[in-house]
Length: 533
Image (tube, rainbow, N blue to C red; front, side):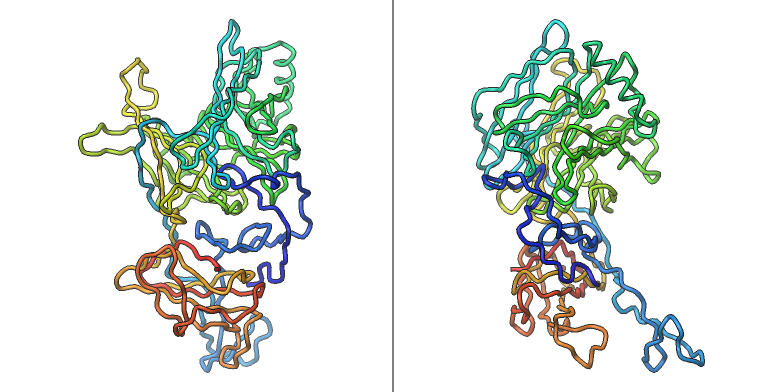
């Protein structure tokens, strides 16, 4: 119960990466605040939240049983009163009757592929495309084209493609870009990409020596002295004019989507890329203080023993929920070696390190529509962005052939568009019958409460408000109640914004900043999240 009870985190910048929301003066370099709430209950955040999603257990108090006599008197664990008597368990705050369920994505097909590096920033969709020009010895130059959109559909180039001369590289792949709230003015934007390194010899010697110093636990075991790949960095003051960092960030073959960000709570840069071990693809994670010197690439996600043995995790597609940077999400593509098909799963994390497979995945599979060709292979790209009409979306692409089917010109067909979900509804907390749970305590950041929930015909949701700042009640020795659950007017139907009322009133009679928790009672319902207003 005692999470961030008296945490007053003021003036800290909300760290945003991938699908972030940053603009203007928010780019000034910031020192890591020293008064952040370090209690993990409720998630690691830099400031009190107004919106809460159920994508993991961060908001659900695990509770403990309370043991009582048959007459209802409390029996402590240590030194209970003698003599021994029959004891009965009271489930008290232990949650029951609820489960997590990932929600399937819907698809909006477009006439052309959506941006693969799209992010949303204060009303503007930003996108970067990295292209290459070939020379006699691999790639002779890279070019970055920056584009903007106000609706996520129609993009306008801003400036000419920025050309960057390179040498000794080929097979450039897996580029992604992000906006850096921590960067110096000349490095407010950053990008990463993978490339096969051809030379010069001095660069190969240095990379091989660096690779040899890496423990075998953390190596891509495809690499050899004569077969080296690096993940390289790009920096820019304005997102239009770019320069490439001379030394690779990592010696690794990240030959699919690489995603990088600045984790404001951690105070470090983080990159997610491919890690290849046991001839299987997985996801690795590395961190850096300065975007140049990186630690070892640690394994964080692979196909588990519950998956078919022929599955690889091919891409990571790491993101955050728009506007909620502490909600770490991943949409990895699971690849079936047996038939070269794929499917998209949903993983969530409280800290960006330990990842949980959300039950109910996959959330997107190859499609088959009447009158259209049957999909075989698909993937998603970019970060989650808001997309008109109370939706959130990722770009997706799909083909009608298995992934490594011979690629003759004109034989394989493609379609692309957005994979989308209703606002806040990536994952549901489901009560099939009757269930209940208590949240951890949190700062009250509004005077009323709204739920994003779907309640089925025979169901209902009721909510109570409790906490140490609520008035004491002799009828409730364990919990101080600000609003009793039994006084809550039943919440019915399907809405993003159910207003919670108690005997007709939505008001919570406590001062902003008070410490409160919520008690939910659900019957035949799906709860996606809540917010203070």
